Length: 185
Figure 1 (cartoon, rainbow, N blue to C red):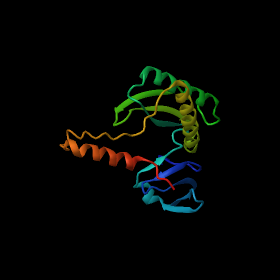
Figure 2: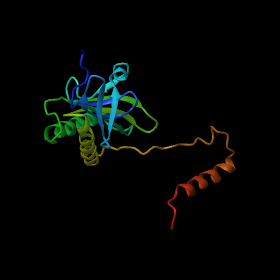
Figure 3: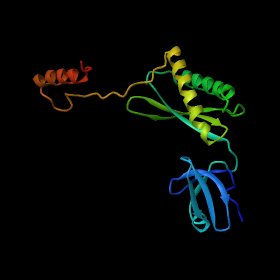
């Protein structure tokens, strides 16, 4: 009676299976999975399980993109660049929602970066991969142009704090240097 799914909707069952609703009968619902096989789910099981309907109430979907920038970055500038790239992608990409206003949230002081999330919007569930990919490529190019650094993870060793003797420190540093060099073939 409440009709949480419709024919053509893309759903995810609590078992993790995903697919398009092909047929809704009195006793069962047919779901075409991505590999093109059909899963027949008894309606009694469907009514007692949690499911996600990616097309209900509408097909548009938010797309969060995680980004990390160097601690020395000017965060106001980072936010400005991210928003400019996001707006351009949403305006010009075939799957972008040009009426959506993207936003940036800084949220984590991580080991080697300050992390943020850029929120985009796409026309439907599958398009999220294409929007995210286009955004990442364009953002990386723009970061390079603007001198904004995406840091590599770094591990620092404080040998004094760890109680390594002075004579042994040099050996440890040399061993780490040798281990970090690319192997010659």
